[in-house]
Length: 428
Ligand SMILES: NC(=O)C1=CN([C@@H]2O[C@H](COP(=O)(O)OP(=O)(O)OC[C@H]3O[C@@H](n4cnc5c(N)ncnc54)[C@H](OP(=O)(O)O)[C@@H]3O)[C@@H](O)[C@H]2O)C=CC1
Ligand SMILES: O=C(O)CCC(=O)C(=O)O
Image 1 (tube, rainbow, N blue to C red):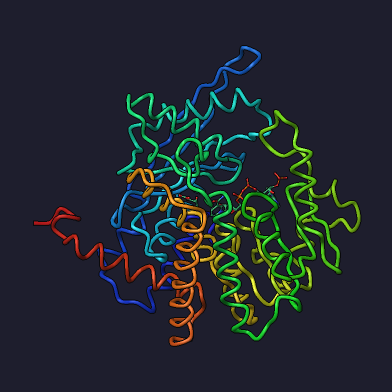
Image 2: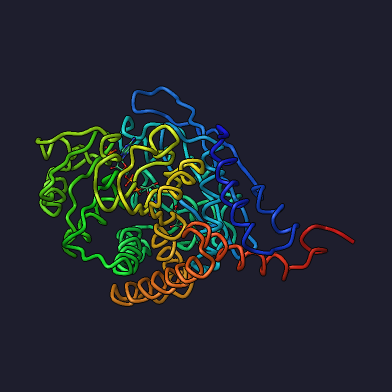
């Protein structure tokens, strides 16, 4: 296996190309990001010192529209990671039929070590550094790991100041008061829940007989855990960066979420209460959670969690990828051979970007939708595209991942070819 995440991501493209005929030019184009920006962001810290942070923004492909993708604050952020995340965004938007290309951004840091004011200065400084690279018709950021609506609000405000124009459509996932969409904060989980509810009955399973383990209890994982709980699924294990907790009779997810919410320190940006300090019994490591004998495993934290090293420990029958890239391509091949059904990130977690698209449409039109309208359109989109991908997987006897890539590639290939080779590649 290659040690580069991007090289590994490209392997998914190569695999899907066996099942779809698109022009060589289009394929070549998709193997390289359109543009990558690396910036230094100087931040005056509360103690008066100056720290320089490394930031990135990568635009992978804009054939189908302005590029779109979140911004991550994490110690492991690198150009390789951001390129891969941008690549997946291109395929996610195409798989869902959203008129956007793919992008991603990030800053390398542990945001939990910064005060709220330091975070605000960092977020505004990042926008100062990338302002010429983004825009409502060019590239539109959103939240990802360890970023949230408050940070998106600061970013939108800073961009508007630079442009001397109120520009809500430059960023999505904003606070409602600054033009955010109802339903964006829960959209990733709601979309994943729609995929699970569409797929699980096809295997003659009922929620009440189905056990679930979820790695990651943030925006995506915690909301999804609660949706599954209310639908009758037995959520037996959850985790965060501190470790996992397990109860084979099922965890009371709403109480855990309520406890965390009520104990958030008022000034803290990141929730301080780990699930491990809330549920004190049956502690596990994250590695042990992945190996639990459950029906459904949901990685909802970071990439590269299931690799060749631990793939043979996996006992779940279904894996729904809420995180981006949680399974390496070599582990994926082994899971397929073992008959474990994997539902891919570019479909399962696409609810987030779908409602981001709705937010952008609302910002552009100045007409704001009700929560019911957002939810109705999200459900419609997620179920329709899940069914199309499932049908293709059945008809061609291929994995859901390959089917999702083929589905996306067909849309991408048509758009790339429609542009014409002369225009696109500068040929005479
Ligand atoms: N937010 C969105 O709209 C979308 C997110 N995604 C993807 O979903 C995944 C999660 O994102 P999101 O929920 O927004 O992020 P959050 O920042 O809200 O939450 C991240 C969660 O992952 C936990 N975590 C961090 N490191 C580890 C680790 N090493 N092992 C286990 N858990 C860990 C965190 O724990 P702790 O609280 O202890 O720090 C936290 O519970 C990411 O892959 C992201 O790219 C995909 C589409 C859209
Ligand atoms: O909402 C968006 O625009 C992008 C969300 C995101 O980063 C993702 O889907 O991975």
